[in-house]
Length: 77
Image (cartoon, rainbow, N blue to C red; front, side):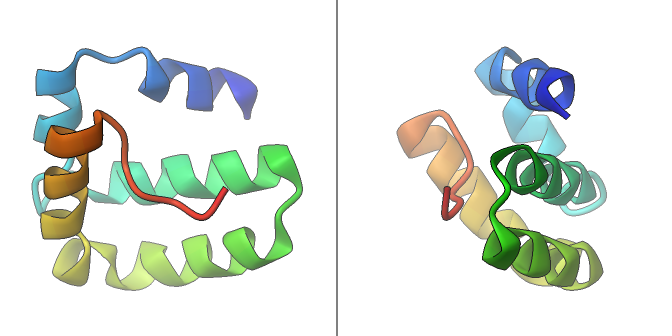
């Protein structure tokens, strides 16, 4: 799981934004799930699983905004 988290953290900003587009935003949901599993955060795991289902519909705009402002996606860890 650490390798997935490290891979996404080290991507260039433009590629992170491309991955946040509606069709590809599921990748960020998988990243959040891996990150929560890696840290042992039960609430984060449950939320990440829920986001895998509704992620492309609701969270892609939030992901793009937080990526452009902070350079990383918003998450509870």
